[in-house]
Structures are given as structure tokens and as C-alpha cells.
Amino acid sequence: MTEAKHQIGLSVRAANKVYPGTHALKDVDFDVRLGAVNVLVGENGAGKSTLMKVIAGVEQLTSGEILMQGEKVTFPDTRTAAAHGIGIVFQELNLFPNMTVADNIFIAREKTRAGIDIAARDQRAEAAALMQRLEHDISPDAMVSDLRIGEQQIVEIAKALAQDARILIMDEPTSALSAAEVEILFRVIADLKKRGVGIVYISHRLEELIRIGDYITVLRDGARTGARSMDGVDVPWIVQNMIGAASKDFAKTVEHDFGDEVFRCENISLMGRTGKRVVDDVSLSLRAGEIVGIYGLMGAGRSELFECIMAQHPHSTGDFYVEGRHLNEPDVAGRIGRGLALIPEDRKSEGLIQILPIRENMSLSSLGSFVKGIHLSLGAERETVKRFVKDLAIKIASMENPVSSLSGGNQQKVVIGKALMTSPKVLLMDEPSRGIDIGAKAEVFRTMRRLAAEGLGILFVTSDLEEVMSLSDRIIVMSNGSITGEFDGASVREEQIIAASAIGHAPASEAGHVIGSSNG
Image 1: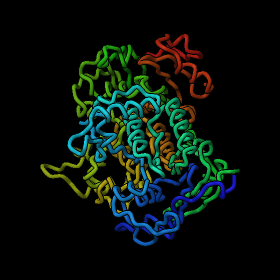
Image 2 (image 1 turned 30 degrees about the horizontal axis):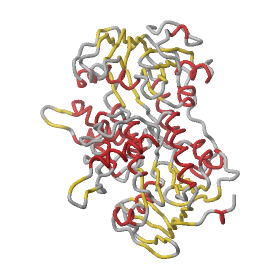
Image 3 (image 1 turned 180 degrees about the vertical axis):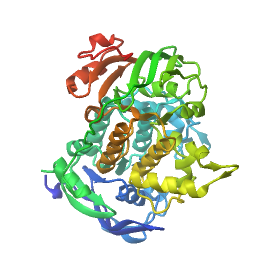
């Protein structure tokens, strides 16, 4: 591939962006070539999202310039950037939950009849066409709040496609998508390339970048460390430029014996809105010091199971036990008090309060432990938060900054820290590596292994085969609300897990190499 094949549609030159206490971009040069996928990669906090926000008009450069067709341009706001043909799919979803899919897609760009009122029928028709293009049957009239996060991600992508952008920025567009949905998105991207659209593509899934990218730029600590055609690029080259080392090791197993059973659920069922069971008679157990991975595709019922465990569905049926004692606390606070902690899939709306400082977010679930008499010991709170920030290697300028000032991966680590500060016996982690770069993944996974070695029982959900196989002592596969397989993490093969995840409501004994009853 020659670079002359793809014309440069936009260039950033000598870009600097300074926030209080943080130099987010340091003399960065970046080119967006039309009719090509321009991959941008780097650890969390490397400056990727900041650079994209500058191009999209969300942020302005402290110094440097943006050029289009050789002419200097400025984007004081998103509307100006959109007028220059720039669209963006943000890493953190920017949707209105109390509005319909169609209304979200056309927000601030409504179709009107002679400029008098909104042409709602036309909007619904175009929204339906976009959903068909994305091979989804999401209704244009569905409320966004009723959609699962993967479906919301599809709506965000449809919103960007509706703008007919000349340059389309995709910041972690596949982070909440299943493997099948990723394939659909890649077909849409191939179609956009044929139309001459320049795609800027950010992802932490390195194999995905190699497969889809035409050009690659790597950032580290706000500076560019590599930029070239994707020809000949492999994972070690990317990792070397990202973190200065070629290792892709997620975690090293900490050898230890498992303790007694710390958690058990029996015959858990949950009826969905359509009258179908989204969790269907699920039973499983977890021992102290054990990491059990739950693998399944979107809609398998994994997140709903965690929600049942945390008392978020009072109409669910079945029984839970912690250290052999029946769990009958009716609310989330009660379950936390019994030693359960949840790291939710959607950190933005369920895990954090964006306007609060990092310190207050991290201590929110464990404030009782800092109470002395009738007062809150702020000194003890600060010291504890400081220790967890250090243990989890969270990159912050100050713990008093709002949590919204952090990169997505660092926000995720704040959510993990908040859960660990409750001193749980059982840690539930729903897609713990979503939006986290390879370096941060290694830190989080090492932390999981260390906690397990200290006796914590960990139950985690993932859609990533590599993760579930490298981290799990035992693997449970779910499909259509049921357990369809249970495997020894040390001996399982990829094809066994994939086969089990494709089964409908089959009993676990038919799913392949099953190591015993799901009741433990």
C-alpha cells in the first residue's frame, strides 16, 4: 500500500493540549487519510481521546494547528466541525435515555417540514433504514433507556452514520459489541471506505486494529511514538510503541489453594419484559481464592444474573448463600454489607457520579468505615483512597479532580477501587476490561490474581475468549439465560467454549467437556 493512494483529508500539526496538572498532548502530528482506516492506539491517558475531541470541536488546542486541504481551520465547537464533515462516535455514549432511538439519531439535526415542525415520520423511516444497514431490528420508537448497552452502542454508531461525515471518528466502537456485531460494523466500515470516507479508529483490541487498519499512529504519554502504513505491523510492534515493551502477558498465575465455598446461587430465574426468561434456572458456586469466568455472547443473561445477585430484580426467584448463610438482604446496601461487590458493565451511568471528585467516588460505598463517632474522618478517607490509587496505578493529577476528567480506563479502575474498598468476600466483575488498554489490563488482571491469592472469590463476565481462558480457574458458559457448559480453566480449548456458547437451552452435560455439576 502506498501512501499516495489515499489523499490526506485532515492534518494536525504540533498539537499541544494542557489541562491543569496534565500535559495531554505534546507536539503531536497526525494525518487522516480519506478512503482508509487510520488507527490511533495508545494506553489509557496517552491522549487519544483528547486528540479526537480537538478534531471534533469538543476541545480546542493550547497550541498547534489543524489543516484541511492545506488550509488552516479552527473548530470552536462541534457544530463547526460537523459543518466541515467531521463526525464522531464517542467512547462514552452520548445518548438521551428518555428519548426514542429516532430522536437520538437526529438530535440537534432534526428533519423538518418547511422549517415549521419535525418530520417525525421521515426520521423514523431513516432511522429504520440505518438499523437495517447495521443489521439490527431495534425499533426507531424504542426508548434508549430500554436498550442494553450493546444496542445503545449501535444507536451511537447510527447517529454518526446519519451525518454523512467525510471524516468519521470511532472511539472504541466495538467495546460493548458481540463478535457478530463487530463483523457487521466492519462491513459498514468497508462500505464507508469505498465511498471515500476517512475513518479514525481507536480500539484496545490489537488484533482488531491489525485486521481493519490501513495506517497506524501510536501515542504514549501524550507524545507520538510511531506512525506508518499498517503493512508489516504486528502486535509486538504496537505494544512496543505503546508501552516500551513487546510483552502481551495479561497475568501470571499466583499459585494458591482454594478455600471453602464462599458463594452459591441455586435455581436463579428472571422473567424479561417479553415474558421470556432472561436468566433460566442458573446454579453455580464459587470458592474462596477462586476466579470463575462466565463467558457468553450478548443476551446470554450474564449481566442480568449479576443484577439478581445484587438485589436489583426483586421479582427474580432462587436462593443465594454467602459462606453457607442464606442471603436475604433485600437491597444493594444489604448485599454489600454481606460481602458482595459489583463492578458494573456500564461505568458511566452505573459505576460513577461524574461530577464528584475521584476521592468521593472511590469511598462512596465504604463511607461507614471512615466514621468516627458522628463525624467522617476525611484524613483516613484520603489515606485509604491514596493507597488504592497507588495499588491500581490510577493516573490522576489530584484525587479532588472530578472523575469525569479521567480517561475511560482510569475511570474503570476507580470503579474497581470503589468495590475493593468495601472489603468484599465476593467480587462480581462485569466486563472488567471494557475500554482498558493492554497495559491497564495487565495491571487489573494482576490485581485480580493477587486478590484471589489473598482469599477473595472472583466471579467475572467477559466476551473475550483470551481473557476468560488466561484468567479463569474455572469457566462457565451461558447462552440464552442458561448454563450450557462448565470447564476446567487449565485444560479447556477455545472450540469447546465457542461450541457451548452457541447452544440453546441444552443441559450442561451436552455442552462438551463438563467438569461437574454447576451446583459445585
